[in-house]
Length: 96
Length: 96
DNA sequence: ATTGATGGTTTATAAAATAAACCAAATTAC
DNA sequence: GTAATTTGGTTTATTTTATAAACCATCAAT
Image (cartoon, rainbow over all chains, first blue to last red; front, side, top):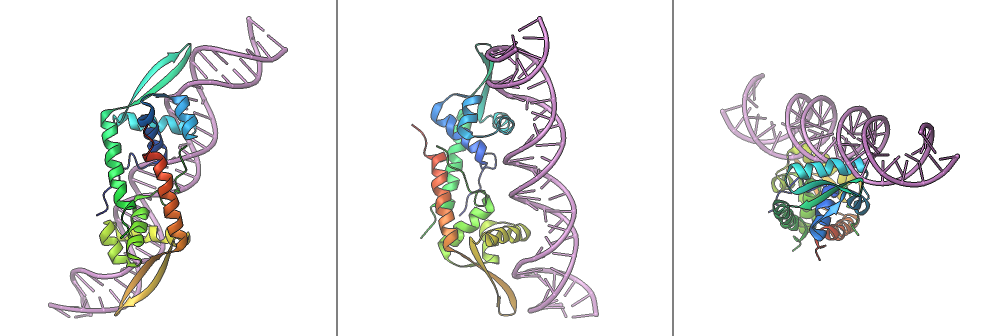
């Protein structure tokens, strides 16, 4: 009845990052930091985990002379997110 | 934009327990263990946390001669769950 | 009386999140 | 020009959380 929740996505910050990347298709570190209100260290770690799982793609470039870390969600990431949402629904829409 | 997720509810097992208790209004330890597939130790710990937060009420009785731990969700628990679901929606229904 | 379930709790360990410390380059203030 | 400050991060250490392992009491059967 209750489906398992992908532990990589069942984390407030990682879920936030994925949610944002689903809506904008590309976001840099600074933007993600602002939107999620996370600390840089925490965000860096969580981006790394999502990247290693290939849920997001991380592109290190420069904006002018300043480093700029761009993130994009991958098809694998989209799929995982959708499955996670389906699993969540077994917890949420259960009444009756 | 992204609402904070109540950390007490943002846990697979505790969310599962709450979800079940929303649907049945009363459940014993054994039933919760079966439905969530949790180990007894883990379930015991998580029930305790929910109980201390007053999200659930725990009644220790006997079924015949065997101990029986009954759990019920409280109004406070229902409210917290509903808020949690609202917060989740800011992560999930964000596209576009 | 010993063995094995049942119904748990307590304690120890593993994993995760978070924060603190740090680094390099750029910018600003003197 | 050079010393402090800010920006954009990473790495490492600490705290918190989740989970599992060990344990305890009672019951039931042998």
